[in-house]
Image 1 (tube, rainbow, N blue to C red):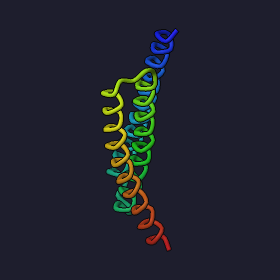
Image 2: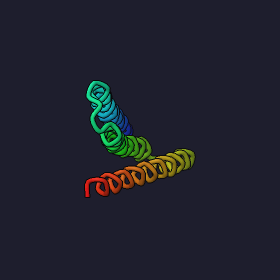
Image 3: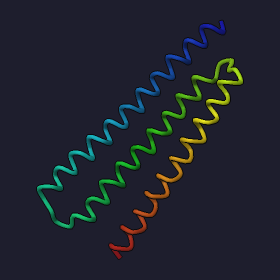
Length: 117
């Protein structure tokens, strides 16, 4: 029974990682389309670049959360101490990355609101 659950969570982790890849792909595609469009329409370029970065950053933040969920799923069934240590390191790295990415997004939002006012 434990082996069946192990296989199920492994497949589920792969699906969640696939979802993360789709989120990244969508965000990157949207940012690329917006950047190419911006190259042809150069009105208020600085604000538009900031908007593109902000939007891409939000997609990447979401993808990091999906990746973290996949890592937790992989470690959920009968983890060894080594697995727990690796998961802890991954959680710390991704949380720090996510924290600074979110901080950058928040600063950009504040700059955008200040420039509109």
